Length: 215
Image 1 (cartoon, rainbow, N blue to C red):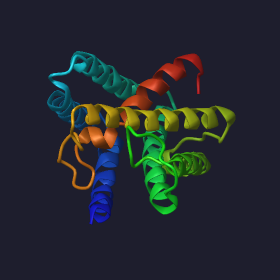
Image 2 (image 1 turned 180 degrees about the vertical axis):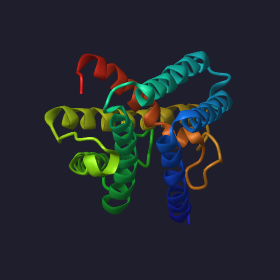
Image 3 (image 1 turned 30 degrees about the horizontal axis):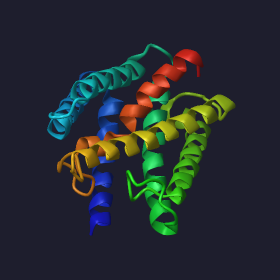
Image 4 (image 1 turned 90 degrees about the vertical axis):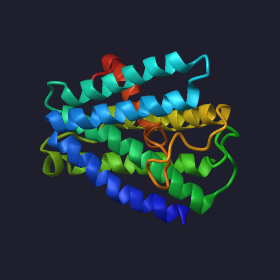
C-alpha cells in the first residue's frame, strides 16, 4: 500500500513540478518560495529545540539561493543544467528505492535502516543512464546541444553522491528528533523536506563545484 501511495504521488507531483520549472518567471518564483516556506516550517517543527536550528535555516536559505541562481543564470545552458541536477536527484532516489527493494542485501548505515549497498549501486546506475539520455536527446528535448563528456560524468557522480548523503543526513536528524517523516503533506513520501532532502544538498554542491570546474 505504501508503495502505491508513493507511486501515485510521484506520478502526480513530477509533472506539476516540471510545469512550474518550464513556465519559469513568476510561476517558478512562486513555486520556489512556497517550497522554501514549507521546508522552513517543517525544519522548525523538527529542530526548534535543537542547537543546530539556526544553522539549518541558514543552510536552507543558501540552498534555495543556489537553486534560484542556477535556474535564472544568464547562460545558454542554464536550463539544461537545472533540469540535469533535478533529474539526477530524482534518478538517484528512484534507483536506490527500486534496487534496494529488489536486491536488498547488507544495510548501508544504521542512521537510515532502509538504505542498502544495492540501493547505492542502483542510484549511480540510473543517474548515469539519465545523464546519457539527457545528453543524447538534449537538443530535441530542451533545445540545447550538450555532449556526454567527462565533466558531466564527474558532475553526475558528485550530484548523486551529495543527494544520497543529504538523504542520509536528514534521516539522521529525524532520528535525533524521534520522527519518521518531516511532515504529511505528500502521501507515501511524508513532508516536503523528505522529498527534497537530496536536492537541497545537491544544488549547493554543484553551485560550488561549478565555481571550480566550469561545465
